[in-house]
Length: 128
Image (cartoon, rainbow, N blue to C red; front, side, top):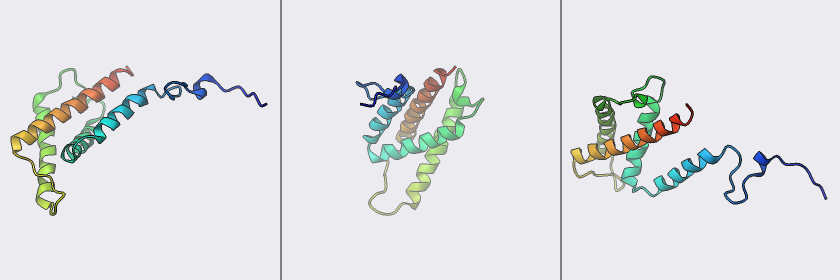
């Protein structure tokens, strides 16, 4: 038999199947799994929200201020809202998303944006 030494960080955990350094990745996998269950209209809103947060992710960003500015957040919401409205204008066919009302849509975008910002702030705090 060939008995080679395998370090603990390569062996992985027999129960969870995770390797050394993958614990944080399990949270991301859980979140991705839950996002797959979003209805299609909300999945598109979430995608645009994540893209906007990716653009805002830099040192000194309002996203990471101790107290984010509500007007700045509303500006981000309006930017995402305008993108959705442009897509609605150009969309033809059965796969177009129709939203009941503009204020409702802005409220949903705000909730998704706040949730994404919270998740990113929490993730960043772990490394400071």
